[in-house]
Image 1 (cartoon, helix red, strand yellow):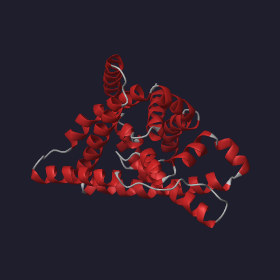
Image 2 (cartoon, helix red, strand yellow):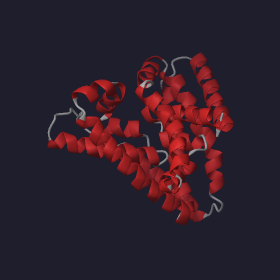
Image 3 (cartoon, helix red, strand yellow):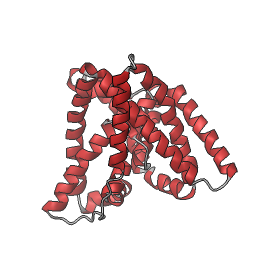
Length: 270
């Protein structure tokens, strides 16, 4: 039963990775697996069999939703955009009380850090790329694929940062979705693309996980305040976007029900 719950949590985390505005790591935190996963990555070689089994089940859920769910997500976003975003907003909302509880002393420095992080996120959100990446089999394109792998790891590990939104801003979203949804075709025709992407993704996951683990140990208040800022920021813009895309009052009512369902689901399986 525990392994089945890991797979289900992995599926939700995977969906969080590919839906614009949603953070896979924030969903992981909502479902109560984030800190455990960071711990297991950091000390992976201390208990290899147990850690391999853990990531096998969690990772299988993530991979299923990314590889086979990307087309489903594109369909849902194209046809039921607002309800889909409302549902994931509920998952994020459900995680906020738990994250707030981690910050034990909410003094002036806490509020200063919180609003500073939110301000920085707001500035970063308005940084837009002007071009769409088109892969060519040359040094420049392969270097960008390597950087994308590392960036994917960064957005997956750091809570509240939506990798999808970032890739849209930088002009890489179409390339990433093509990579995820047609991986078997790409493996056959351009194996260097998934090879470089995966290699730098693995390196990035390990390096960034060690950094996050260090921050949790020695700068806990700063780290959780940063994550809470990401959570508030993501939740506000997700709900705002969903409301703006809602055409009728009945749709808004359904969206609120789905958000409440997402909130309860987070509480149930965290």
